[in-house]
Length: 151
Image (cartoon, rainbow, N blue to C red):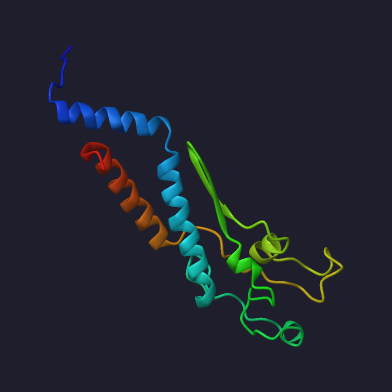
């Protein structure tokens, strides 16, 4: 058996910080949450899903009922402004507490939801884009590098 012992104070301090941070990664998850909330909100003006596919345009029935022709932009503006992250030591969740949030993400049909004036196509706004994945990896690298530099 080979044993390697680190005696370098800077390396040991970095490993200690890394171990401390890996035990409770809330600050890292907070950073990821901020990144993902900003990314999600930025998709609204573009009208695209995380995979880059454009949202289905509003139907004539919907256009007759609202002043903004853009999908997911209601009169209150509450969906695109009410995106939040919830974080903890080992998780990050991004979503909205708005009642219409799930319907907009997954869609719904009038046959199941009688109160609708027509079928609503899914317009995914939550999820990870390729750019999100790259940013998460970069944030992870920065975060781990910071454990060794003391930042």
